[in-house]
Amino acid sequence: MANDTLMKRHPLTVLVAVAGVVVALLAYRGFTAGRATGDEGAATIVPVSVAKIARTTLHDYVDTWGSVEPERASEGAPAASARVATPVAGIVAQVKCAEGQRVSQGALLFTLDSRVADVAVARARQAVSFSEQLFARQQKLGAGEATSQKLYQEAEQTLAAARSDLAIAEAQRALLDIRAPLAGTIVKVSAKLGDAVDPTADLAEIIDLERLVVTTGVRSTDMSRVRRGQPVTLSATGRSGAIVYVGEQIDSKTDNAPVRVSIPRGAGLHPGEFLKIRIVVDERRDRLTVPVESIVTQAGVSTIAIVVGDKATRRAVKVGLRDGDLVEVEGEGVKAGMTVVTVGAYGLPKESRIKVIAQ
Image 1 (cartoon, rainbow, N blue to C red):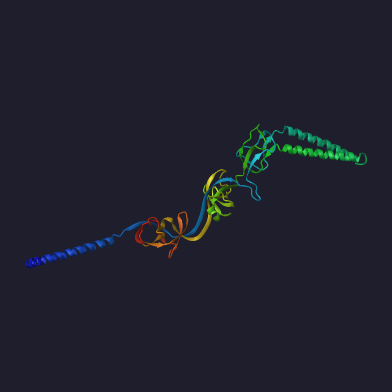
Image 2: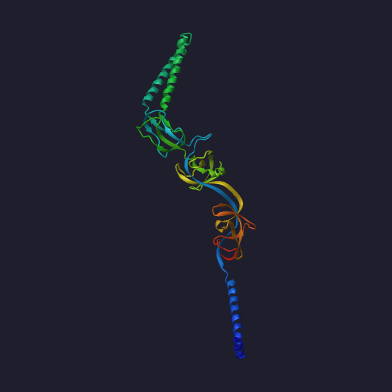
């Protein structure tokens, strides 16, 4: 019925209707084509920062904390610290040292009351003098001539005994002069003038501040990588030391083994300081490296975005040792001097247009 009605209409009317349909179809095609063309022309350009792939030396570290202490006694070297005590009881009569004072080995630090000992020495010297005169007289007389052999021997024995007594008296007097057992700095003075002291009391403490070490502990899991002679960075000074001792026994409570690190002379550290140390346990030379932020890892696969012209293309890499802000990479076609995306690398598609805003 509709077709009959349409055919009954004027032929011009039918022609206009058909033309309208054709124009509508052409307009729709133009719209869709224009939209596709517009999308392609307005592709997103991502602003990024870039850096160069470089060859460098990387280090692996074991970080720990330790305290500064005097060096302990070792083969061929005494300890770098000593507690000063008296070998006999007495009264402190003189204090000849002060905290912070630098002293040489053998320097006089304290003197105990020596009046009784001085008298004993004086008497012993008089006895020696008398015995020497007696023996000299016997020598002039001559044994077996003007005097008997017995008197000669008795004078000789008396002189020897007097000299022995003098040596004992002088030795006992010398015990009252307390001297520095090593060269160093007086870090503590405990005794005061007039104090009654005995061998159990510490009068002072001396430390050679040029012979200090850092004592630390290293976890059992890291002990296989730590050995004597490895370089160490002291975080407090930025200077370097070296491992001088590695203990063999693991503390069951802390799971650490003792390690001691040398401190260079003039480092400005003091006993008791607590500082971070970094042990260099591995060194890898001439390795390809990129900034850490250039690595993007998704689903267990690490990639970097290589820049050529205004395009960045993702490339899979194997990530190795990290040292600070750099990380070791290895991959097919990855070479030193190539440019990689750093800031802005995350979220980039496999291939995209970029605009470099910083290098």
